[in-house]
Image 1 (cartoon, rainbow, N blue to C red):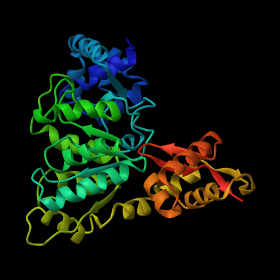
Image 2 (cartoon, one colour):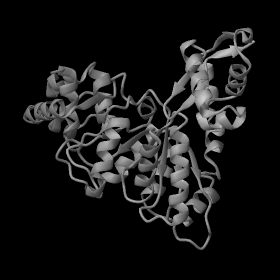
Image 3 (cartoon, rainbow, N blue to C red):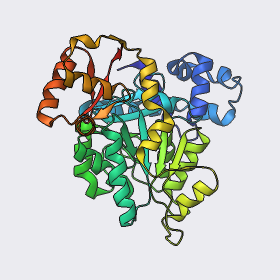
Length: 370
């Protein structure tokens, strides 16, 4: 067992000591293990650490056995334990004030490999909400986005399902331990998500889906994401809480406008009116506003490409991909090349190191035109 991670698990189990205090203790003492080994008379001298916190820390030994059991359970169930110092811990989440000290992650997704966009909304969506969640979620996933939501009824599960059907990446953030799935009817979808994405929680196994856990869950949804999109929502509820967390965390917030007479559009309209969210009508508006493709291009400067080496159809494909990454169906539409011929061309360009394929049959040019 990793001594430092085990110490963080133990600190995280202490009721009354939150992530901000734990990070301060670790920074002051040099490590989580050092915090647990520090005598009480020295602990109490740490700025911001009072008698109550010191008293709680004195009971750490009794909690260590529970942390060891948690470790063994996670190893058995294929659950990855990510500390806030781990390179695989979500980079965006690290920046929020009260980021969890430890996250539990199950599934194949590597959380820093894909930009994340959250799609949230009411548990009782109208046809309008379902239609747009079904459109927005796969649109993002087909362009290499990890669609993040909360596995709840309504908009959340609609987004997850739509991404699964499109063969994309989707991550569910839950308000309970990863030993259960809540709601129960979503168990099969959650299992499928492990193959193309994952489940994330800050809660230890055995933690039930208590109502008080869900606002904490919502701050993680917002914190892991570059942006939060509210599809439909009442004036109060989890979707609005997530939107306000995102706003406070300096994330972009977007909302779909709705009929002013519909109760589940009032929340979105209020977010827009109060300048918390930007009004959107199409998912491409979000990508353009976030500059996700521009960001990816600047992070990986392309090599130079000579067009003299390629035939006319290959040059057509290269030209359309020079503007931005495209789904294969968009390439067909823009080039008028049949899907069977296009598959051969794209394969050749991939083998030649000219084009790269992202999840969801999205292709991008990785060499610059000359």
